Image 1 (cartoon, rainbow, N blue to C red):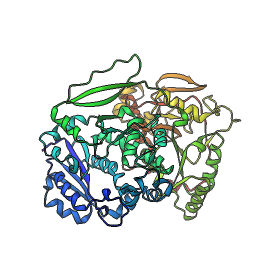
Image 2: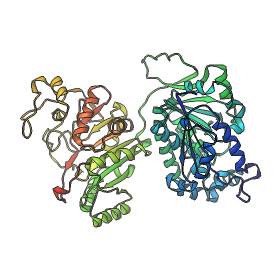
Image 3: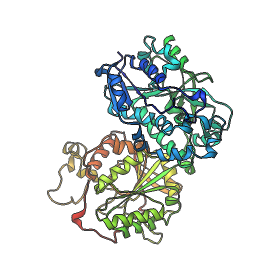
Image 4: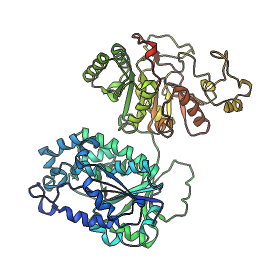
Length: 585
């Protein structure tokens, strides 16, 4: 058995073989046909993770060894809760204008079987869940449809393909076929899908029967998939999982390898290529002018052909942002921060705003909920998570969202006004067009996070506040002349921040270097969010812990922070809660 690859599959009876289910005759298939095909999957000599209903569990154990099999059991009906967009899918599939986009669509499974799209659209989540759990400690994961042997049965029984396929999964692999003509792609309006994909026309479709990659590539693909799914369904656009896969292959071509098949969509040629030897993958390389191209290491993958793209900043109008506001027990303070940030254009017009409500007072919770409903904000109430617990939730929500950048604000972090004098460090408090300038700066400088205020309550970003929180061994190493902490309170002086660069962008001054993390407002990229809050997690995080950890990541060259040479934040609390109510995490 291969020991570096886990296969993931699922089998549920969706009612495709039932009479009067609205399907065209050629679309009806008895469930027994799927069971017969599923038997071939169960014979594969590889670790296998299977999602299925309770009534099929015994069927699997009669045919598989437990040492190489994990079964995830849940009734089909649980998809109503497990699949976050279940209600949206039902609404779209029943709309006459959607069903009549193509002659075949009204008689298709996705239009007539309530669980069809929720199930096929959940494949990516199932694959990602298994790479997170990693029950067999493998590096690569491959989704394989339970019914794939209906068209590829002769290939699945061939020797060595399981060992050889891992070499094609260095990145995330899609198998694609040409798809030209028509006004839709599996029900998704073709022009809208092209816009979602950032291309002029959709010329290919990525298959959903066989796909996968390394653990890291699956994690990134999963985040992108759900971003695009949410955008699509909110617009009332729906195809199948293959529509979203196709968009992904266009939108971020450097993330995905492709194997091209013929326009009949049959996956068999991929298995044939595995038997012949090196597999001809289409790979897009990201090339920055004048930078050397690293030669690819020897492997079973033959990189033919290869394309190149130049890395350019994205247009701000095409960027999606989220704002996460943490609030607690004082609805008037929440109203105050919202009113404050509306001083600057686009923050609330362009961003999706989430209110993470830690309130323990029932009346405050209800007042905040009603305010969010009135203002069009998303109300998130999961109990009193504390300040850092709420910050961690924001990171988790951002990772699973559609957004490119996030802002995090506590409800006393207001936006400064144009008439305010310079901060205690001498920097300006107001910058016209702040929203667009921040995003363009993030795109150009590739910061993982950018702090929005040089001056803070307890100090300024010219002082290295991480000095208080790093391990003593590191403190002695980096600051041998200031290696001892004061016994009480703050030190009279602490080491300065080591800046590597000062710059100006569109009139916005900034600095980069060993910028310390704090819970003060910042704009964070998707990659930065993963590095800061997801790659390493603490059960009960504290600001000091993050400050120490992220300083060390910055010193190691794995994190790129920046700070404005401006102080656009007005730290102001006008509505107070008791100090004994404060919770960190």
